[in-house]
Length: 452
Image (cartoon, rainbow, N blue to C red; front, side):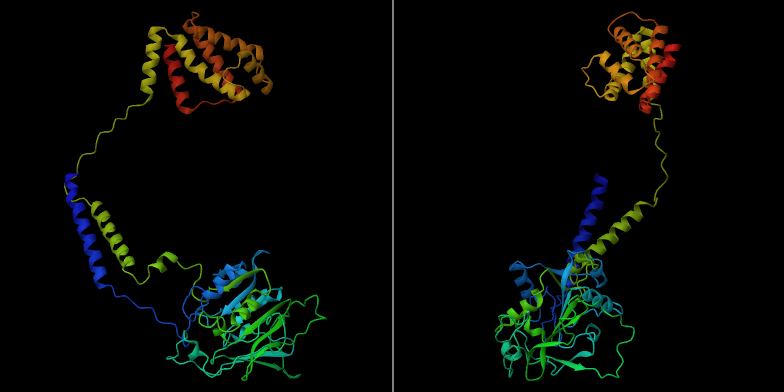
């Protein structure tokens, strides 16, 4: 131990030096503040542009809400307990893959709701409804000097908007305060000679198609254009809000913005899922590594592993003369059994040899018959014979009685002892009650010594 003390001390000093160097060289990277030019609409973000307030509000009011951290393909594999509403807020950090919009629209067509809250959403998520075309326009770009946490800067010169008509989406909503950077939703009718979208599979028609219209419905409209529109897609619906500021942490408390957000997101009931996969919070990412990202902890661990590998490599290399191999005692453990058998043979203790074998066989027969250890041998023999047609109850009981008599002191010679042992082994073979390999070798060694 004293020889290795110097190694332990050296490793400890090196580890302390590495920690000190990493700590001294660490530069704290300040998190970029939230801006409307580069917002973070994630429900994990508690800043002004995030949607954490809406998520926690839904959770606190008893509504089923979750963060969806998988691709859109996983929606189709969900059972009835899966999401019924998917909320996509703001510009995605990870864009939708080539086939994801089609999968998502297929999921909506099966009777689900897609809520899109963005000034300029992905056009692939806005399918044509019969002859109606839905698109968006971005009116004003936010500057870098605009503070999203200050409502007076975000809503300067913007009047409140009242609902155009009473509906489920505008229930209990008197006025909504959008931002001055809100987009505009355009609804137009395609001309008769304009071809429809190529290779677009027709969504399933809902059962109440005769009572419903495929035309988009405008629920909120400002002086620039429509703010809130919804329309059917197959058996489901698509809801579009062109201003994420209304549901963001910085603007949800203005006027009736919170009520409008609840109506849009929770109006359909069921499980509400916020898309966090495309916000950069996918379930496939390593959360432990992400937690320590930007800190010296990862470098310290990497350098520590490098030191361990170097130590293992140096320990595996010979740096001195070879040492002779230690002599290993290779005597068989059966030598003890042979010695005991010889002692029993010299002392003519045949009853002890029978006891060693019969005691174990009786335990096995008790388990085989399903009785207790205190059962009489007649009961054990009868039960064993009942389970096995190859065993005679009277013969087995006689064998057990002779073995017990020999154990209790009845004189027995070597020939009779060997005969009893053979009968016990025959019972084991007949019933298929194999002994452990160690006990079998010991018994065989004992019989060989007894026959000498």
